[in-house]
Amino acid sequence: MSDFLKRARVAEQQMRALFPATPLQRNDHLSALYGADIWLKREDLSPVRSYKIRGALNAMGKALAQDASRDLFVCASAGNHAQGVAFVSRHFGVRGVIFMPVTTPQQKIQKTRIFGGDCIEIRLVGDYFDDTLEAAKAYCDAENGHFLSPFDDSDVIEGQASVAVEIDRQLGRAPDMIVLPVGGGGLSSGMIRYFREMADGVDVRLAEPAGGASLSAALEAGQLVTLPEVDSFVDGAAVARIGELTFSVLKSVPRAHVLAIPEDRICTTIVDMLNVEGVVLEPAGALSVDALKDLKEQIKGKTVVCVTSGGNFDFERLPEVKERAQRFSGLKKYFVLRLPQRPGALKDFLQMLGPDDNISRFEYMKKSARNFGSVLLGIETTDPANFAALFEKLEANGFAYSDITEDETIAEFVV
Image (cartoon, rainbow, N blue to C red):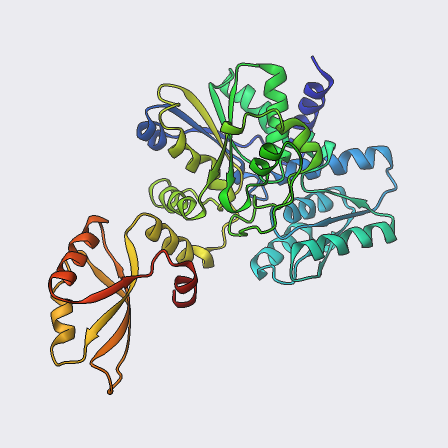
């Protein structure tokens, strides 16, 4: 047995001091939907609702084993890593200083404070994470603390590999395929290395957000790449640059095995898992489940494990998630209608709507010097085909309109 396998198994045992193994659950809904044997590794059910507690516990425990007098641990995070470090700081009774962007939602700040209690201090620095990270590292150096990287650290990677150890034991065999989310690469590199050394035949697929596809960019370039811009919607996995240590493992993954998942499509999976299964997933936590849509022809009849990596979902985001899901599914559209300024014109338009069409937004500016007025309309329906029928009626009756649903600039301004 390799040293890495031994260390990963020791790390997995260390987790039991804080929490039982997270469940590996067969999902009947997904299994029936894809004609496969689909299992979910529920990291969203850890004490901090993500796998990040694992790397933090392993790295902090090792640092204290080497120097028991060490009493300052520092990290920079706006989410799950912060909560994991806070929880583990309280467990070991050490001082944790957690740097978070000024723009971090209060819900995440409060959860981090609750997990860490009196053992942690939260410092809000910078509007952007790069500024926060720079401030955290500068403070750590000045105070001679131990910096806990969210992913690019060998002890953190080893701790995240404990997820693979549990799957191996819980399933009792290697699955045909494992689908993993990838952001900085701590979880994916640790698990890939574990299963590669345990059972070389395990097929792995990685899912990253399309707006933060740093692994795909690095694989295409053959070296680390810093993305010039990142869509932060999938905040638990959208990173501009994958880790150096993690890429040393992930660079051997075939480019075709890394899937870029559209942010709006992830929203459809979040809504589906909530409505059908009662499972609350954050955007990064839904990545692996959403990736099944791209793998449906490859997984039929196979045993597939998806790691649901986190469930720290702020329900204030639910209206946005629902909105994005509806637009992606073609069930909601926005358009500008040229409405004749004559009595009965609005009534004529309303009569064109189908029984399942619902107006969700209506803004009309009447201008007396013109023959037409512009109406901003938002319409929800139950079947995308209903819009084709509506637009056909509009055109047949001489109503001019512009569909602005896919116009990001206009839609972002008005929606």
